[in-house]
Image (cartoon, rainbow, N blue to C red; front, side):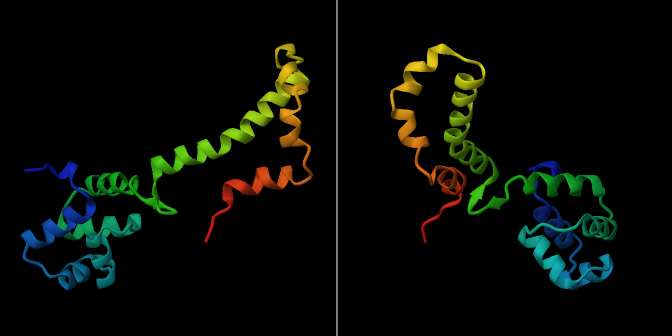
Length: 147
């Protein structure tokens, strides 16, 4: 049997409501919230802190436990079809070319690192940086998405 701290907010609310043999309508009325709000919470949708407080009071539960359950579930939200952690890593990877461009230029031109001279003078770097659309490509390419 899982403890209450290992359950999601939806599982806790649904389980406590069923333990009391309450309908969703009864819980909504007891908590002073809309029936659709109870339905959304039990489906796992996010909700406001006031809603959590109201549901906790109606079910005579610790609001802190419900808030913690909602926070843990909130970490698994999808952003643009990705969970949070993969989205952060993909964003970091997309930013690496721009970061490398800035770091190399600062290191060569501002810090005068002679070690970078062969790379900078080879022309390979110039192919990427001399094009007039380079700033637009660097700024827009990470956001570009094929339909």
